[in-house]
Length: 103
Image 1 (cartoon, rainbow, N blue to C red):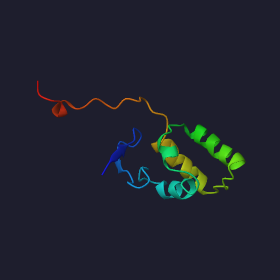
Image 2: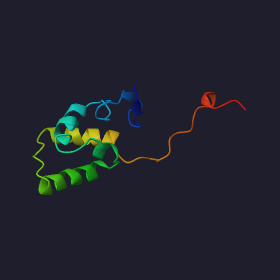
Image 3: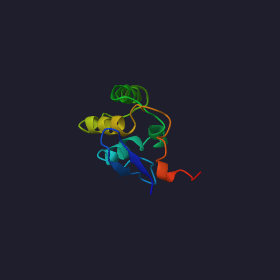
Image 4: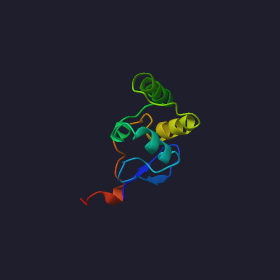
């Protein structure tokens, strides 16, 4: 089972093995609305701010026939910006000393 963490929540969450999305609040909405038209890898490979996710949703609505998200939109934006928001660093955190090979 793979895990992902959020700097905002400091909690580990399971990653859904089929979609690759973090299983957290909003997961089902994102899975239902987003994967109806495209692969979830388009979500997982991005790291956008809430504003940029909203711009992307509006672009999809204007040009790709995405339906209005209604009351689900704020929850979808919360999920996307929390789990697939801007990254502080593209590098992984250093390994803890106890996991490093002995010299």
